[in-house]
Image 1 (tube, rainbow, N blue to C red):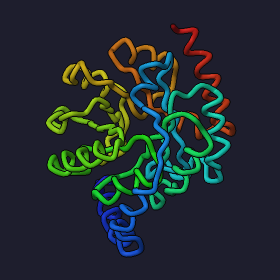
Image 2 (image 1 turned 60 degrees about the horizontal axis):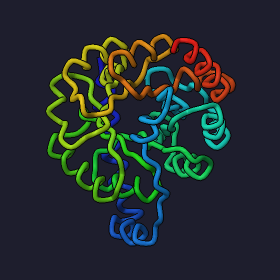
Image 3 (image 1 turned 135 degrees about the vertical axis):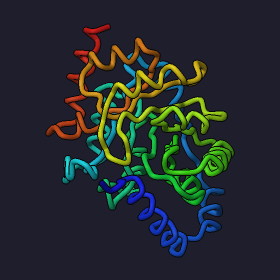
Image 4 (image 1 turned 30 degrees about the vertical axis):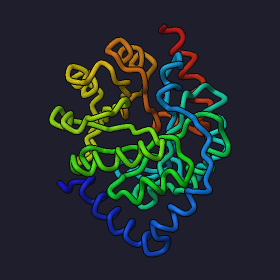
Length: 263
């Protein structure tokens, strides 16, 4: 069986080298000097939210194919916000997920809640690029980078005042944790794309109590959110469950109504 993450990372490294040729990093740094980014904290938003839902915008995935091919990020992002999302996650990978960097910018300009850029970060170039897009938080996937890269990318992000969501899947990846206050547990194995929510419960035993924990992928019911909250999680990244419907924002609204009944 092929390792999907290896395929994605290999393609991403080629993609980033091509981006560097089109717009060198020194040009991005010059543009950043003139850039003003509205401060929106993902951590604060989750701490102050009753639900902790990070609603995700994505059009496709390597495992499911097209989920919502014609999805328009602006109305969906706005509907997510109106219907109670604490924050947004926006896929910017085009080749495997049908997203674009412009989707991130559009979501930011259309809403007032924090936006996480969901991307496979393999080069410091992308950290600077994320700041230029205006995103409030960046995802670092432990399985996709080395510990040295994780430390370096985290340091750059902190210097740029970008929050970092460190994504783990296995206990051995806790070695990647340094100053990270946002830690995500991906219930999906990015090599095989098999999903088991039990992973979040298993990982809860080894996560630092001072960090804010986020459970990602495979969350399909309000009851599951309530159970994860009891285990210590304060953030819940949900995408496909909403995006596969005709009206993702309305689906979030129904989900949150049912969640309130569980509280």
